[in-house]
Image 1 (cartoon, helix red, strand yellow):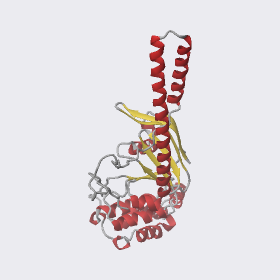
Image 2 (cartoon, rainbow, N blue to C red):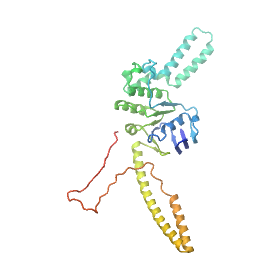
Image 3 (spheres, helix red, strand yellow):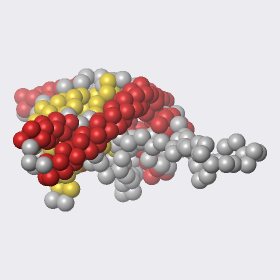
Image 4 (tube, helix red, strand yellow):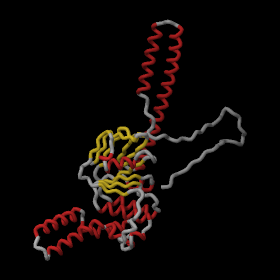
Length: 343
């Protein structure tokens, strides 16, 4: 489990987080959402390398935790002429070649003890990575992403979307304890986006994915972390359920805020009247009433309902019944627009 507790962090000119908390547990596939500039990528950097940052709060993570990472923008190394299979299986092939080299050396060397030790260490590393079945696992991932036909072509011949997919495969096959992806959907067409969905859903470990893509959000995640206005909300469940819960909460908070504001305004009017009377009439009882009413106002301000986590955009619709209108006009709508985001 990875735990962040009351974490606060700021740059010299901007405060990013104010006592935010969340946990990531085994097998959770977590979508990390929030508007651009809210600090999602910085928070990921803190998780990956906490020693680089001076933050307040607690970050609990096993020191042996292995993190896999796929960045938002990445390009294949044009100097390497590896095939897709060689690129994905690079670490496995490297250790496999090392084991073969040790075995060859043992045939002619008298230093068998040291070579046996090296052989065992390499074999243990290979086994811990699931090396015995790595070729089959690579083929499974390529099939999931519908890229099995590209297995033997050069990485330099892949499209940007295809390269992003094999990057994801490569990190997943290293079996990290935590897999982090920063907007892996960038520049993917629908075919590759669907392949990304398949890869995400096939992963057995903890996933933390920054994304704004509704298709992935609706099909891949069982936990939502939402960062907004220096605050964070976490929700265990699907994105569609989180959206409904968020909307419900926002409406309820908005209604309570309106009630609170109205009560505060009424109390402010009473305070102004009492203050005016106390100015012109020297009466101890009126002064006591004023003090009592000011205390009430202070309590109302202190308990004021917090504004909704995210503002609701609502149309301003008014039926102007007080003015005469032509008999043929039932409803007049001006400058109104509506749009739906593509899934």
